[in-house]
Image (cartoon, rainbow over the protein chains, first blue to last red):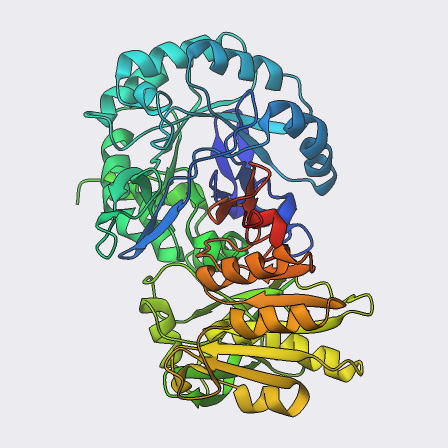
Length: 305
Length: 255
């Protein structure tokens, strides 16, 4: 990767700004031998909880106009198996690992952070305070500045890893939540997670998904995500990782120009598991043609005309 | 596993509402019977997900059998020679071809014929004669029946009786299993049919492998979308625990 693609995120600098989003790329090891996973800007692994979780009642996915709903319910192997079985393979592969963690209490978020601190090969910790798919948990941290600040500062106190906090578009005022997590010591903001939607199966006269609601992702979400990022950028000084419907170079340029220092690619991985590498190459060519580096374009759409 | 940009080389209409798309890329995708590929055309951002298909043929070209059901399959069914198809795979766990000397009985319904025709061809090439029970609602729901007749003992059922035996696949299946217990069942089709095939096979203790169908996002075990509850009380993922399962892993034996 050329130097012009470097994406500085505080203490952490990524070789390129395309990260694969949590929940859409497993633990990355599944793609080894098929995609050069070491070249990815990073992989935010499937949300990890203290205990393994079996996931929600199916059906768990439904397609929507230029997007999809999912209600997976954070099916995952748990931190013990992840650190013991998956991390050695990720280290061997040279993947830039972002440990996405999920819990339903501050205490459990703190416990996860403690157990990840000192694990070799973790580039950053990402707090999922915005999962819409788990009963009694998760998203309530992400919809109020006070709760988001509380969990962030508690985790900050026990981790030396760069700390990313992933925000929910369901917050009444996402800027308030962003300011709160910055004040509480977050190094980076990731935004946005999915927003809850529903599809009705008209033949069965019931919601399509087993859990009725699911998080919406995909291209349909992009304008909402860009708008929120544009607003949050004006209110915080820590770097922001943008996401929501990115599937092309131009999509990602919108996020960079709105103020994202890096981006995450999610739903588009399903159609093309190597898309992030393709986008990195396309961005490299786009920047080279204009004699620019990535940091030259971050937030440029914020400038007065 | 490979991701290939392929072009459609041939579009056949093996029955009124079915298309067989043949495609070729720079190299073949070496899928075994029952393994599948994720397929998407260049149609922009909607529908966003690829579609999972078992291969009917695999070699210098591959092929899939498409029945237009929703938006994605309708777009695929309308594709023309020369159109680009992105294909990645092979994925999942296919049929176990080790029949241990048992006579294979293949049971297909609708588009479920796709992996079983491939399987029948593999058995044929290995010198093993299969029985192939093929059910449709009407005579128009039996694509590729003529190809099957060339290489296996074909038994057709239709619900309206227009072709073959009137009724469902389970009637001839039960008779065959009653006549010969040194058999093994391989099946693919709608859920209701698979459940019935499982009941008939498990009732007489005949080994039975079923290929399940499920909407998928990733196709490779990472999104956890295609969960089905197994008889052991844990979720199985169609894309990587399957799509082929032992019947008893998915369906309790009928009491």
